[in-house]
Amino acid sequence: MARARATVLIVDDDPSTRDGLTTLLETWGYRALAVADAEAALKVCDDKLPHAIVTDLMMPGMSGIEFIQGLRDRARCVAIIVISGQGTIETAVEAIKLGAYDYLLKPLEPEKLRNTLDKGLKQVALGRETVALREKLESPLGSYGALIGKSARMRALYQMIGQVAATDAAVLISGESGTGKELVARTIHDLSPRREGPFLPLNSAAIAPTLMESELFGHEKGSFTNAIERHIGCFEQADDGTLFLDEITEMAIEVQAKLLRVLEEGQIRRIGGTENIVVSVRIVAATNRVPAAALKEGKLRADLFYRLNVFHLQLPPLREREQDVLLLARHFLEAFAEKYQRPPLPWAADFAAALQAHAWPGNVRELRNAMERLAVLPAGSELTAADFRQFCVHDDAPEETDGAPVSLAEAERMAIERALAATGGNKTHAARLLGITPKTLNAKLALYRRA
Image 1: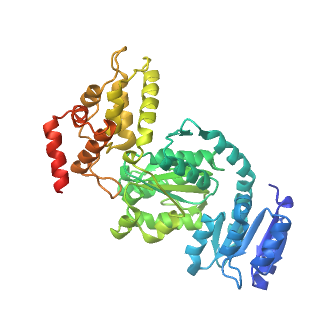
Image 2: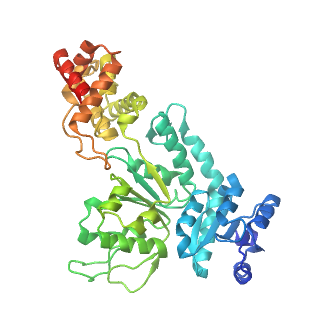
Image 3: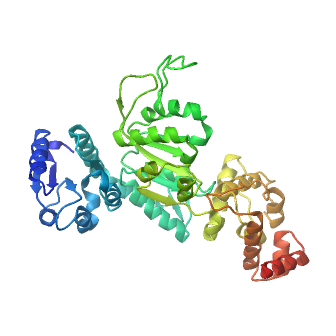
């Protein structure tokens, strides 16, 4: 949106701040309106919604948070920039959750305000297009872009993804290994105003600690041993796009501190370099740990956590998505049948029951791998529970989840409970489904009753 056509509303009880911002904005080509309190600002918005709002958080009477709440759904249609002191950062984060575009710390840096306004206005202009794209992605068949599932947990996740994608705020995704954290991050990017820019994934656990700083920020030729040429880091590569930092809790604490500084300042300096380079990158981070536990264990800096945790998405494990198991299995079987140029294999009722009875400690990744093994069985075969036990049940699931590890005993108990549910409580059929004798099943049930 051209500045000459953009109206910016300034909301601040300090006259000098209002006058200074008005002069700045008009110099930049915006049309500036200024009011002294949130009540007056709401009246302006009721008359005609401005393109952007720059508002203080701490004001007499109605606070900045209450003002944004008063805008209700309109908050998503205007670029709201909140001005925050150091002591109100948590409140500023709350404002972003309510629909604000970004927050800036006092004292304001004019160039940072100018850049933030420009980006915020571009996001508002793309807002309607994003809504249309999100509606197009939603499928009554249980998919949302590349995500598959129609359970209540997944539908709630889709709604949250749509809300998060419309902002430019940082996102923290947590979930057990195999739940699809990178796929969720990519979906957020594809729905965001940055979708035309790059999506760059980086697994923090796969990079040696000594190389992580260079991988993120780049280095100049000769800056250290073996630096035989300039290296452009991930932040520069992902400029105007999204950088997905997987396993953020495996990143060295020292590097986390430098990452935080980049997020706050919006610029990087290559190792061995002398110039600061301005970058515009959205960060989506992920971990398979419980964030609170990672903080307590010293795996994640508290200040970085608060910066990343503007939006937190908790991905459900597959064992809590029973309604989605068969939907996912059919999707993967058909996809691999096409890949290997084979007809999709039909399945028997006991195969479906076996899928639903399995605990899936490896989550969607385990299910996907299992269906790939089965997709190459001879054409004409009907998949049975015996096929599932023979080709798919292996002790290769991860030992830990995101801080809530599932022990072998727990996984076994869940499998037995599901088998009984799938067979209507028939122990003989459940035992056959599990590949054990009825006597063994009864012994295990007796053990559970005593526990």
